[in-house]
Length: 289
Ligand SMILES: [Zn+2]
Image (cartoon, rainbow, N blue to C red; front, side):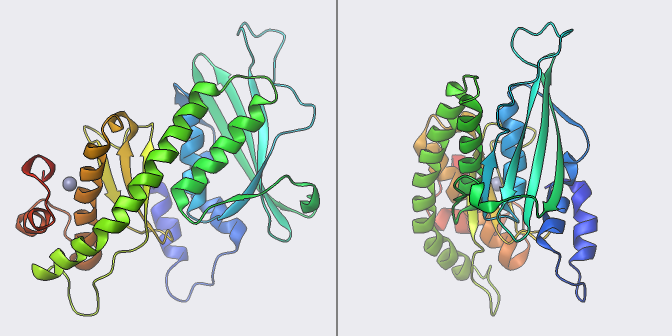
């Protein structure tokens, strides 16, 4: 999560502070996108990021494109295709919450600004089917796929982007099953090496994200513990690594060791305890660093 979000959210979530309204939670997680934000390269990376941030506070929403509103095209623009587009996500609360996206393409960059508002002027009966899934990364991708399909009907080819999203969803569904099978062994090994104190011994819910944006400098994968009001951990794998399913499985196993150490003794290194647990669960040397 963006560093700039940490302090305001932490102070608002401190003991004694009233629970935030749903619209306020959305405003906080989308704070980086309520001012102009630009991305080089494929626009879908930016949209996937926004949807994943949103998935930490929203479980269900619908995607809406404007009626009869084509892509923006200005007279002076020398782009061969279009200049941009608006659309909105509708969270079916009462009254509904709308997240409007204003998106522009220029010089191979993509700029987006979001506007968030609660409105009685939205008739939920007329909102197309809502999209939901218990897993945060999966629901964020289902929202992105729905959006790409809606925008395609208005005249732009997103087949390569959609193919990538569907492929990553399939892989993550598989990796989630293997992760669930691995978890008891990781907890058992952590207990054996004293990495779990009294009263603990659980892993938080963990979502696996297979993203087409970099996870960090020179890193192929990372683990983020639950924080800032987000009640699940995130194992992120760089989608450039998705050629080998075995490699991705071992990365998940490696990140689960970080998860169990983070959750139970706040240890985030590849030190002796990490090595002992990793060996115990069968991680070979190349996956222990
Ligand atoms: Zn590591």
